[in-house]
View 1 (cartoon, protein in one colour):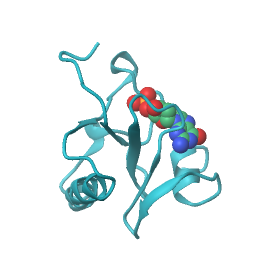
View 2 (cartoon, rainbow, N blue to C red; view 1 turned 30 degrees about the vertical axis):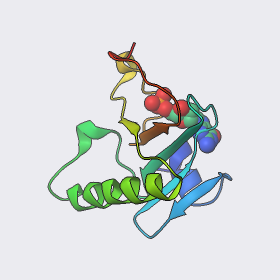
View 3 (spheres, rainbow, N blue to C red; view 1 turned 180 degrees about the vertical axis):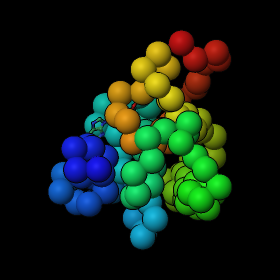
View 4 (cartoon, protein in one colour; view 1 turned 90 degrees about the horizontal axis):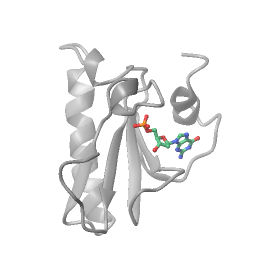
Length: 112
Ligand code: DGP
């Protein structure tokens, strides 16, 4: 999508602090980190949110979770949280599917 922030980051049109990249997805550090380690993993193809996961794009999502596990391990995390906000009420501010990966501090539950 031409006016999508994360599509532009995926295409390299807007710079990001990349921690992993392949043909399917990109992982980069969140601009407003909420934990000592906080990165986002996005599909390069535009998907609006978890609510738009389908049988057709599900292989990319499975791949992204493998990337999350491997990248978290490589960044030294052995305990971390994976979050995806869906819709404005849940706090989604960028309408391109992204998984937050947060670690390096104690977490509370339930999230606010
Ligand atoms: P959410 O609120 O769940 O949609 O998360 C969006 C996240 O994206 C938020 O934690 C801040 C981050 N973010 C927004 N704009 C940029 C940007 O231009 N670069 C980077 N690296 N992160 C961004």
